[in-house]
Image (cartoon, rainbow over all chains, first blue to last red):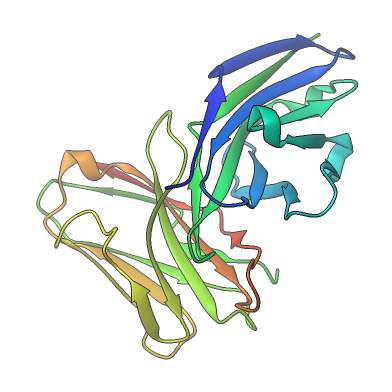
Length: 113
Length: 115
């Protein structure tokens, strides 16, 4: 069964610093992987997705993620953090027939002024 | 607003009461999903529909949980005889079911508190 593990339930970075949120996946088949963001009192928003095309995926708001099969990783990065990036971020994988999303436990990103 | 909507946004109930939540998907989307999110966890899949057919319900948490989508448009999720452990955010998502991957668009959720 597919699953994802997010390393670090809380990450703090200074405004302007690099953001790195870690995600490792477990899948017996080539996975579809996602990063979602959840702002307070709002629904989940898709940041980016990997669907077996380019291994470096660019998303919204300046985020990108790189699929590394050898490391079974799909880490999320942003070169320069902004205060508005403070939110909870979820790594996710599609399970089986493509209809169930399996989410990680989430990483709360704090931006320090 | 043409996104997924959920009603109510917040529900406080007493243990043992029944509650029902509604989800209105994006109008042309034929698939509708329900997830539950507890504090400190990622969303957990519960069930989904294609049009009015419920294609999987094995992940519903107990027989106290049921979902319907009678006309293939909006859906309801009912929890009978609520327990304190049912306190969570209930999320709905919809997608246009074509191909191997169908992006799911999420609503804002209904936060349930069981006293």
